[in-house]
Length: 176
Image (cartoon, rainbow, N blue to C red; front, side, top):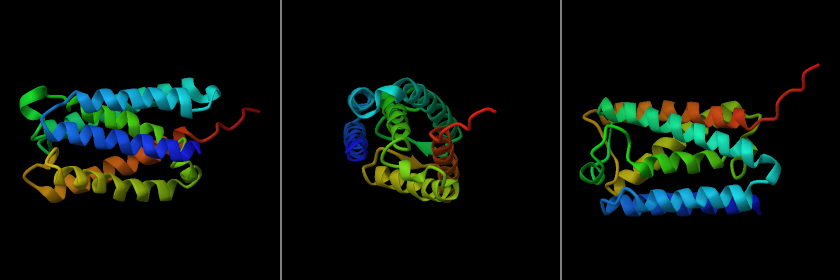
């Protein structure tokens, strides 16, 4: 049941971010997604894992925001509907919120990837660009001047992040 709840939380948050961004609103989706992350931590994550998951979510949000901000600065990614409302060199808040939501998945609905790093890498390499393409159809995100480069870079970015998140969620080996 936790896995289904986690999956639905991610989908609702993704939809809220993309719909609000499509209207030039950079904050509403981010607020909804942040509330959903809080709900995930309170109602879905086991009490014994909340602190660890909160740290991982925060770190992923920070690293993902910095990575995407770099790609935005290099004109690999664009945020056409957010540009006027946001205007900062960092990615808009709704993208940061999506990174936070993404960080909840490997501990729950993508938990089956634990111990399967190669599969996590492949799923990230395909799933990240697929999510990006869904956003392009809504007009909230766009490629730079070289679309192929954007897809290759996003594939690598999500392959690495997905593998890293799966590894971070694996049980630690006991010291002898």
